[in-house]
Length: 428
Image 1 (cartoon, rainbow, N blue to C red):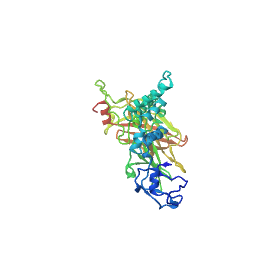
Image 2 (cartoon, helix red, strand yellow; image 1 turned 90 degrees about the vertical axis):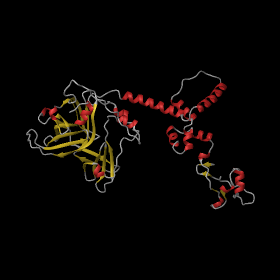
Image 3 (tube, rainbow, N blue to C red; image 1 turned 30 degrees about the horizontal axis):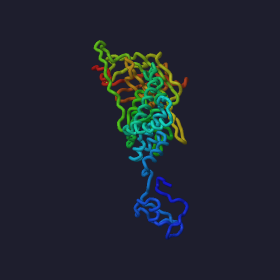
Image 4 (cartoon, rainbow, N blue to C red; image 1 turned 180 degrees about the vertical axis):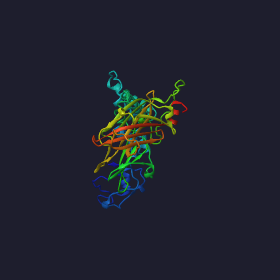
């Protein structure tokens, strides 16, 4: 029988002229099996039991085209695509129009035709095979992929239609993006991890290092080896990043076209909406939406626009956080909780309710000392800070021992004035 590794001599021994039973000289073997094969390709002896050893192996690729076509016709779609990456000959067979035409008709059946006699059907089938093979190589493969992509795009479009009024993002985003992770979203260099990352927190076993943007690494305290890798990605443009990008070329969004406004003297300083969430991936500690946020020109300091979301002087704006902040991690055999850190999602919309600044990043609490004393909150004051080239977030929290919970007493957003001018075509 023929295998991918060459020829295997059948188990029965044949009596060969001029030799013992079970032994066959090279000339007789060549004449019996393949007269056109050169004599030097066989060597008798040299193996235990008198078995023959082939110097030039006959592989599956040397089979006739029709046989390979029949074999490939039994493969499913994923196996067919993988087989096309093995070699050039396999690629040509896996792109055969007859194979892909059958697949196309199986999933996207054409309309049923009128009844015809059997002889006419046979003749029509032979003619259709000829017409199918006349199409360019890979035509029906491309048609099948194009059809599937069209159906998938329409399905995703239906899921993305409902919009969340608080975040400005599709409300069914998780359902749309979950089965469609396709391409490289980000690339990181881990050679100098301590220099290229930010320390978030740790326990006795693991320390957390944040790589901007979107990756949280858990390294063992003992030897620094990777223990866990966690991705935290904002939903904004995640569909485009995961479907339109590739390993060699990441997705880059189209440049924003500002809308000019010559009437409003404080254009770009008001009408902001902010939605902020603190969570650990499993449970949510705080989720709030804030509308009609604004800033005055005199609050533009050191190249940043300062917008106060929660004022420390207005106790009516202060909000609570449920429970202690911690971030859970787990491996195959170990798990733990790292205290005083979590994930923060921030979505800021402009006055036209378009996403202006979107952030999803791990954050950690740290102690702060403030000169002012507020007798309404007698407890330890903590702060959470985040910074990137486009903006900053500063949040202050007070721990109330009697109630065993945190209060957010101050929340301020800082936007880079360069981003403001580029977004609104202003000159602040």
